[in-house]
Length: 80
Image (tube, rainbow, N blue to C red; front, top):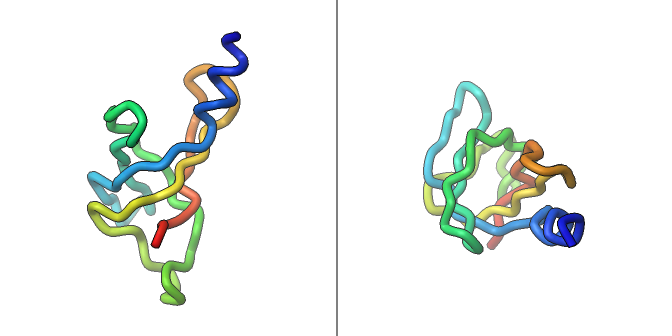
């Protein structure tokens, strides 16, 4: 049952709450739990065909967590 919970939480949607431009990372308020993530690297280098633009505060993003308890996460991109 624990493995099912980990897999179910691998992909999450949230809203950006903070942006660290120098570190190319963001913090995200996860929609399912309301919890604010730790700093997450932003992997996508393209947003709306504009190169190298980070998400903005309140942008909806897709977060992927590694399938282990307390695994690290990554922001994959911005949702329209």
